[in-house]
Length: 553
Ligand code: NAP
Image (cartoon, rainbow, N blue to C red; front, top):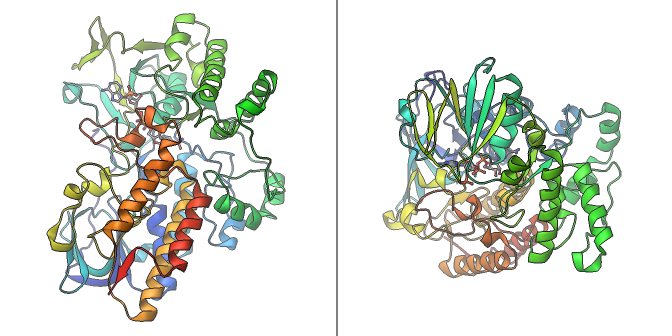
């Protein structure tokens, strides 16, 4: 990593501190937890490895970093005042604006005083005799609490590629998800980038505008749709905000991912997308064109069965491949950019600004490393089997150990000293993505088994936190101090998650949703694909039946 990667300064240390709740992480989940726990009158401490709030938006400062969910939906709903006063400037907010928003939330609700920054939790152990969790951080903090809540994020552990020689590189080396804080420019430089997922696809057009030459080392192409990002018209936003409560309600209860229908007047029942079988070829082409021109990941919702039916999926994929061929002038480059190895949408669809257009620039070259593999990084650049590319700067946009990576890097020990690492050796298992059997009083916010990465994260975070807070309130009312989920309830939920996934094409994608990008990681489809509305109904049902599947003491 560059020596100027985000620098950590000193912070004071907790010594045998006692709280009602300890939280790991001060991203959006950690912030909302602190807010709710304080409302409930509980003491809480959040430990955060960065020196500021924001989680993923703190670390991912790479050029072009931008949310692929629309700002007016990707924001907290818990405070009508907050949502009215905060002014988003673009349809899709950039990293800096989202980080400012997280900072604003922390300051507005005075949350920082309960956060210990620059403290990475290394160990969390359940003490069964006292029914409490003991935490340790890399800075020597020691804390105890009745409850421990993991707000560690789904994409917070960078995955460095296993390419020999990376540390020998003498030029500037950046990793997208650990980008330095200072402004970085590439003027006059020969730049190489490895990785063409969402991060690479966002960074490439911005780097290309500055670099003398940019080589994109692509192993597998991804599908990308245009964001059609634009400044937000304040008058339109003011009008939209008159209906914000109704919009939020629809985002939470809808059948899909919780992004909603961002038209000014919320429609209680947005017209349901039809399956391809119910449409003529001309109608299919027209609706795909309409969604493409509208922009954004909602493209995958244009036709209802595009992630369920292989033939529909092929039609949608063909449409995008035709777009790529129509945009990219060099036929060989266009062909290399056309994904053929996975059904569209089974790897997270990318949302870009001028990605394919960038390959029409004279200073950008696509290097197809599927054909000419990278053999090593040298002191001067990247060496493929056939040639060496001298570089001033190398950017790694090679993804994350997603969903389980952050949890498994903490030495988490439950009842009887059982390690989470061992429990999940064959893949993560949980009840509702919220609790793991044998780990009493431990909750995972947007954990594997919940809609998480298939949803609007802010919707899922609020729903999870509210559900956990309600559970704690119920326990407090009954004087209970310990909750666990039963192995039977956990097995039932894991089966359900698998059954829902089996109705989709997700299993074929070879994606990070399956852990396929991390060598040796068990191939298990981790998120719940049933949609945020259905998931909320299930969680509420569990609660209304006296927390069915959970045991209290
Ligand atoms: P990613 O989707 O996992 O992409 C990683 C890329 O690195 C892939 O192209 C992969 O190629 C390549 N790669 C990895 N190791 C390599 C190697 N040894 N040699 C050559 N290529 C290698 O990671 P990401 O782009 O960081 O995105 C991860 C997720 O983060 C996204 O899917 C999204 O959910 C989230 N994200 C969101 C936004 C947004 O909101 N706009 C932005 C960025 C990220 P292979 O496919 O061949 O392995």
